[in-house]
Length: 124
Image 1 (cartoon, rainbow, N blue to C red):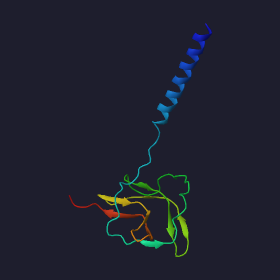
Image 2 (image 1 turned 120 degrees about the vertical axis):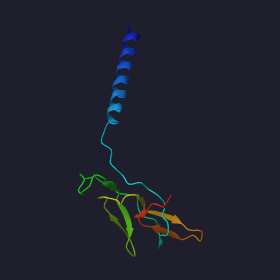
Image 3 (image 1 turned 60 degrees about the horizontal axis):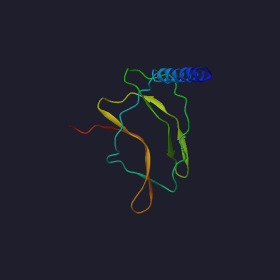
């Protein structure tokens, strides 16, 4: 009798966990911009990489248009130091994509930072 009771408790706990996970999947999705590569952008050479991204609380949409997307905050190089720029809502031009900010090590060993920027999609 105890074995049956324990297995029913286990099944009940598993069912509750599955239901909670299922409900979590029904939440609101934040619209984000389509992303793509940096093409033709000139990098800024930096002496060291930026810190980790800061957590942000995403505010309600504050721009007009049904196509608004959230652009995450990013670190920006300001001459001698990294400065955090908070995320924001933007309305992209049709067919455009966002090249996310990135720091890459160049073949010569230098660090190159590419700021986040919008690009027109390449013609097909």
